[in-house]
Amino acid sequence: MTRICLALPTNRACSPALTALHAEARYAAEHFGAEVRLLVLDSADDRTRAEHARALDALDPAEGVTVHHLGEDLQRDFLRRTIQRSGHPEPERLLRLLLPDGVSYGSCTDRVFLLASALGCDSVHRRDSDSRYQLHHGAPVFPVHHELPWLGRPAADAMAAVPHEGLEPVLAGRPVSLAGASFIGELSVDISDMRRRDESVYHDVVGLWAAPGTSAEERRALVEESFTGAGTTPFTGDHVTLGLVDPMRVDMCNIAFHRDVYESVPLPPATDTIGSDYFLLHLVHDAGLPGILHNRHIENFHTPERRTDAGFTAYQTRFVKFLLSMLYFHHVYARMAAEGPALLDGRGAPGTGGAVRPERIVEFLRESTALDTAENEWRLDRIDTAYRKLGGRYAALADQLASQRDQLIAEARQDIEDHALLVAAWPALVEAARHTVPASGTPGGGR
Image (cartoon, one colour):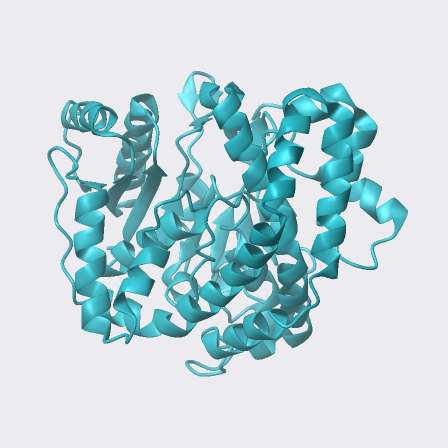
């Protein structure tokens, strides 16, 4: 029987999302015979976490579904024991990377990965608390419907049932390592207000994440496509393809990875930086690992706190840090693309390609930290000009960013160094997690 981890990390009130997630877990168990570990990593405040616990406790038990609701105290306990078992010489630093004080999209998913290994799961299926399932003829459209049949199986097994135009024969023996779709609704990055205020400023700012050497036409196309997901057209029927999945076609609110991927390389643990959890999408693509791309898109929405002054400042700062991170990630992505299937170690059954080589990822990350930061100085100059042109709280944010300029540039580089450290430590952490029993986390979620 396949055991999967259906996971939702959250730091906000989301009881309806938890109820819907449980319905997807039940669907996976009933339709595919999966053993589902429903994992909620809860970093919300005490009152909200208690509301989540009541919502989960009120759900009717489902055969094949086990709920794990872990607050940060229980997460920290599991991580301490795992890190200690791994024998890493800097246990407190690792703990800070995996459970930082600030918001980290990568770290929360890395904790999911380690807990999935501890729970003996074959795959991780991640959802987000600020999204919901579409409805079709009154029934929820669950992504797990396309994630479970093929994930982890040789691509050749799927080729008879799934269209696979352009899939090279050499990939047939490799495992389906990813299954995903995108979202419909609001932009994945909450910057639509910028676009409404000034289209040209929006294009200038969003275009800052383009790779060096991008032509003006390519930059315009990137801006138009960025953060839009699958647009706004609702689901009307299934469409599935097998191949190398373009990272721009999927979103981390709607993704599933086989354990061979997430047990090899973790996500960047950068704090207060959007997009820090997309690294593995590029790795799977560049390593030549097949994936399933489907159209059971999740509906994205923005929570009200982002509209407050404090929420605006926090979110826009995360967006700026994302733009600065691209100095390093463009280098790493280019190196991974050039490496291609050589990112795999060649071990295992013939034709599978083997597992990802984490030492090569460490090498690329450490290489990138030697890059000249002049490009990020330029990015901050462009952001400053753009935000002052928009005025209002954008101009106030420009003042704040100017006062933090050196710090932001240094943090962008430090985030890459931290990722390299975590990748190097990851194999031992995963092995330790497999022998570390997490607290059940129910009822109440712990703190």
